[in-house]
Image (cartoon, rainbow, N blue to C red; front, side, top):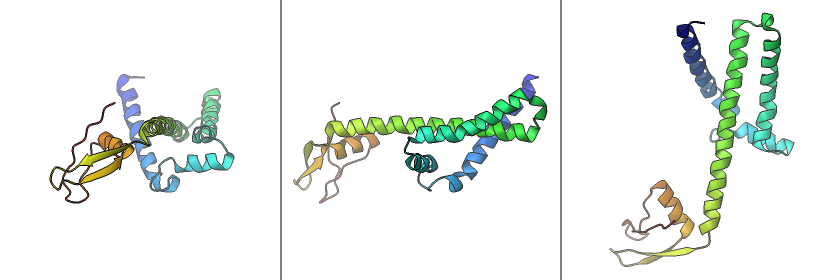
Length: 161
């Protein structure tokens, strides 16, 4: 295959995958969680979202195995559908695993500082407020400002890791 044709296939495939994933958002997600269906399936099957996704994905892999074993049965539209589905499931699997890692990291960070209380003094109105260390740490991670509850002045704080 000529490089130009190969590159054309790659560019078109990823464009089509993006279009499918975006168009399926409403059908397969809760509106706030793109991995909603895998989590609901996991709960119904008493397993993890990763294993639920794998169970759904394997059907697509079997279809590709069948096509590869019998290439004369393949049509361009069938190839497009099956390989597009496989790429999309790869992306969904990546998102599922990354979400698990990110949630675990946040759980560890939360558990580490969850019970500490920090007092912050307002330089303007001279009031003192107590905040949980986790609130301050989360604001720090999000690069958000913590403001005085009375005068809305930004309070200074330092996070030591």
